[in-house]
Image (cartoon, rainbow, N blue to C red):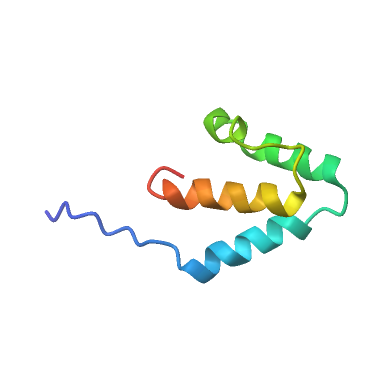
Length: 74
């Protein structure tokens, strides 16, 4: 049995698209924040690193960076 890790990394363009989608999925910031808090409730270590006083685009970029930095986990 081959135990080699065959998981593939997400393409850079996919991370870029995710960041863009997150930034525009909600027009207002409160629903955007609520969405992220609900979606990431099982990953409080990510939530604590997001500064919700920043713009949606900045928050999205930070989240995508965090996800990409630990792709195996998330």
